[in-house]
Length: 270
Image 1 (cartoon, rainbow, N blue to C red):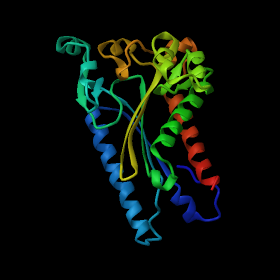
Image 2: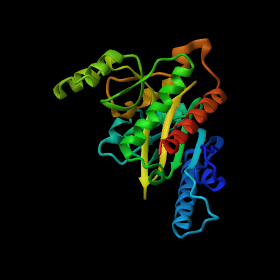
Image 3: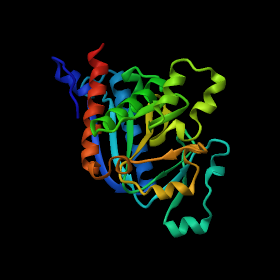
Image 4: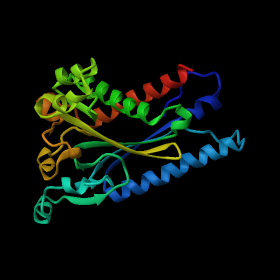
């Protein structure tokens, strides 16, 4: 929980971010938990708007977890299912389930060794639009990677966090022509994705979030076209850092601290 600088205890409670480490859970339970926390945030908002001074309008909840059993999630985007390249037999052999999801994005994989973060946040309280929120998530993950000595960046052509290929991405950021976007983002030059992102917003409360590969079984990504981006590869902290790879608990702690700092800064800048 964070408490931004304030002379009022009520004000600090208003800005509370509740962090919950759920350990390893299956995808269905993770989704149900998100829905419960969304209702809690909406309830707190309604109480505050009704003038209940005893009911703090909390920023929300930060859910940290790993999905087990492994699961491939497919969004409602047209053609997303076409990016599931594995047969039923291959999925059974790998012990990987398939689930439909209402988040944004395309298709992705979740499994042990991957830190999944579901921020259930009152975006209206934070004053964040969807674009700014996605950039916030990218900024947090980039800072986490760099805290462990790994340079990472965003790619203007594809949401998420990437390793390598900075030259192609920076060229686009410096004003490369739109017609060159596909060339700049395709293939190895675009870098390898280390963190996928996909969200849903309901009445300006966010759900779903990000998946950071820490010590993930990257072979399971061969069962899909990750995020629907043909020719792009995936990586992990373990692959990039080797023996220097942090533990899952270290990554959780670092990400939580960074999240807290970013949320506090939003209120302190007002």
